[in-house]
Image (cartoon, rainbow, N blue to C red; front, side):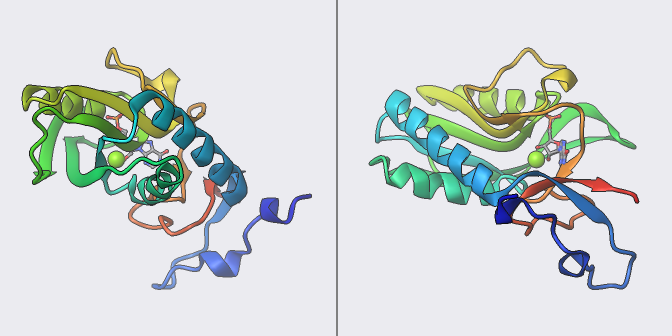
Length: 195
Ligand code: IMP
Ligand code: MG
């Protein structure tokens, strides 16, 4: 087996506050993610050209965005970059669908060709909201790029233009994605197992 595909050891997943260790089963290795990010960057550069603005939705997309930006650089893309934080409010695990801006971008988007980046496209409500917001503010074009797509969970009528990996209905962590604020630092994407 590729060394990169070896399961992480549990010590590396220890939490600082003494809670029991959870096992994380690898879904995509760092190498597999890197290869996919390079391919995505080539597609985006071909289709959108060098003069774009990147808007990344925090927090989950920060690792993906950082890697994608450097891959885009190798294709001659030199974007402006801004960030926004969005929250959906609701009770329990089912979000109400209402999306609220908790941190807005500061750059002017009028006339911009925007690549809007998020970690996961699930219901689609977050990105539907963000895209309309940027269009209403005068963006010339808004293309959507997500690391992961969960098409089975879609509620809004929306598809991404660029997708890293399409997955089923699994809860995943790592590479920027969290479970209860942890695991974002993992260099791979995996699922939490209870055994
Ligand atoms: P939606 O498309 O509006 O439902 O928003 C999807 C958001 O839910 C993502 O941006 C993540 O922040 C979060 N999310 C959905 N599925 C997962 C997962 O498997 N792991 C971690 N966060 C997730
Ligand atoms: Mg998110």
